[in-house]
Image (cartoon, rainbow, N blue to C red; front, side, top):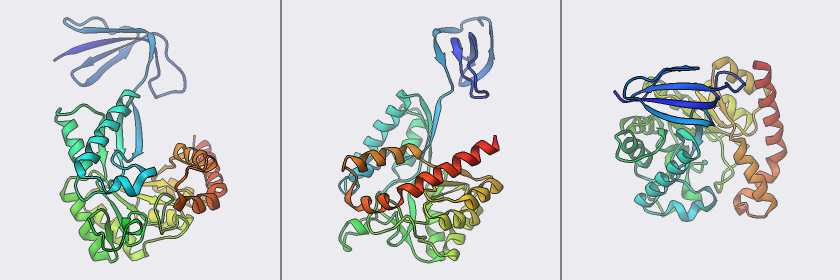
Length: 315
């Protein structure tokens, strides 16, 4: 088994809030087997001298869309599947160059299984890239955040959206995601900002629909991620057993407390909000997003303060 010794000038191990001084790491195959001041020099080990560098574990981004261009959604969505997959591989490799070794992809807008294929190609060694954990598609109510019909004529039914309006259809879609290799199930129970015709402040699923989705995912052993905005949407997602709340733009204290009690994760995507603010100021935010984002931006900032305070109190 191949062995590598990494000599680190400094090490951030992710277990504390301080840098460690000169440290050595011993790797055997794909596993770190020792971290200490000196790991010795096992016979045949490759020595990588980073004594002038700071070493850290790989970064993890828990919410990406490798195959979606949110600022050019209508145009990009109509590209062929191979074009989206090649773009996704390019962005995955770019993330890796930035130090991200794991990405959780939260869905595509395409009839095929692009991120499943990318994940499997990387896992098998056919392509280089970070570890991918994927929710292949975004299950949405008709006219919800994941339904692209609002951007195209109603006759344009190309399988871009995974939409349902009854518990039975919802179960079918969740089962299909499972059958084709999903790691997570992704749904949106409120509208969003970058889609046309829906509203982040309004809940899209009825309670029985959301419960059917959560129960089916749970029965199949798949964790559930929910794109959500409205405070009630955050609470509905948690009642349905969501493992993570994506964005949770308008969450309030009650929702934060429910998430903490349930052991659910909040994925607030705050950097994306900051970028959207800059686009709004520069007049470059897509027209269908402007009125929604301008209306909610103060409330989003307030929700961010709620999340930050709760995290500080938990430490």
